Image 1 (cartoon, one colour):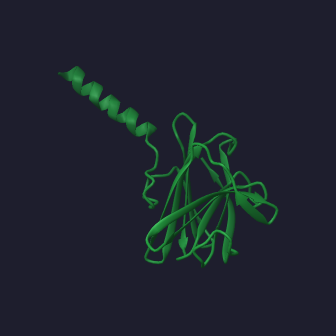
Image 2 (spheres, rainbow, N blue to C red):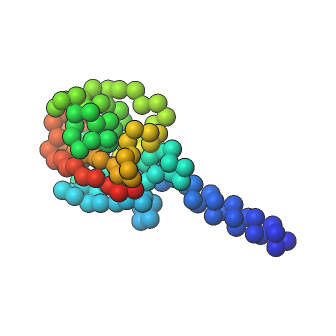
Image 3 (cartoon, rainbow, N blue to C red):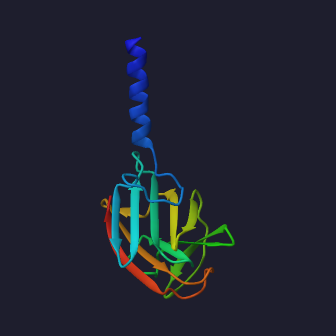
Length: 164
């Protein structure tokens, strides 16, 4: 009986160590290993225990679109995930930054959710970590706009590095 209890406890600990943040549109306390607030945005990130999956999130005061870019501190070359909610329906687009613009791109293995509540929009994403985390650091950008679309210019933006 003691062995069974020990095995169950060890399995629970192992499962918790491999757990990823829930894609529920919330940045909960203790959910991400790195959380920073800058220029009105909350940015968060975690790496899975095996280093294969990166979870990122951004939250900010907007009823329009919100985006997080990873891989660089500039839009050019950044892999960006944009999201908004219109008429209660979430919309997400994966984009690649090109100069001062961006265009849709493939995102194999990525999943995302976006939630708007009380004037705040939160976007959470899980995707393969390869190519984004360098020496334990993740370069990010964040932006938001007032409209529910993927083409209007941002009204707010920031850039920062997160230590994972």
